[in-house]
Length: 226
Image (cartoon, rainbow, N blue to C red; front, side):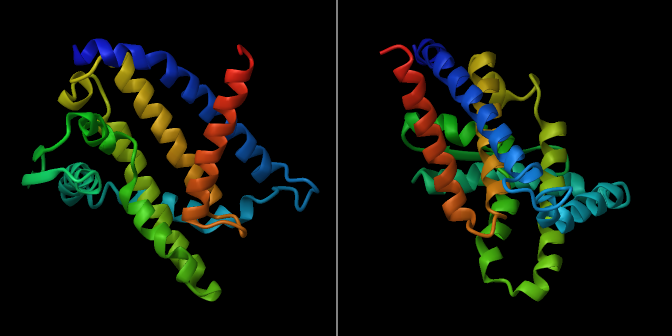
């Protein structure tokens, strides 16, 4: 019965995904081609140190791979745990090895989807650093942004290596539902992260910006038919 209900959510998720793609284009246009024009590369300069952090992690990962295998599994299970706590679910056990891990939780069945699919779309380490970014002095922000880039690269590689049909988490729901949910939530988080760098925003206002853009898109979509 639950899977039948999830199939009904697929059209809505498809609409939300399209809205997220549209919002991504708007954000990228604001970054690369701001109005009025600022520089030849637009606002891309604000992400330069984060980009360096992404490159550093990508190059260093091969050297540290043995320990990173465990850290990637740990972050996966930690995301299950953090989202469970946020949704007031009870955590019974936590285990993370260098190949696999497991978290046992209990609570409302309506929150299980968010917990189960969270590791595939929620970069918790990146959000952790973004929470404190507004408190960093401007002369030290470049160092902080390098660490942010490291976390982004870490989560991007986790997404690449951990997302697939072989995952029990993903197969627990109809595959179209799982992947639509994952990519919609992933784009939402990417948009939020990009906007949080803007001088007029932080991670909290960027999150609200992403939510309001979804609502405005949904109301506009609804207005096309009614």
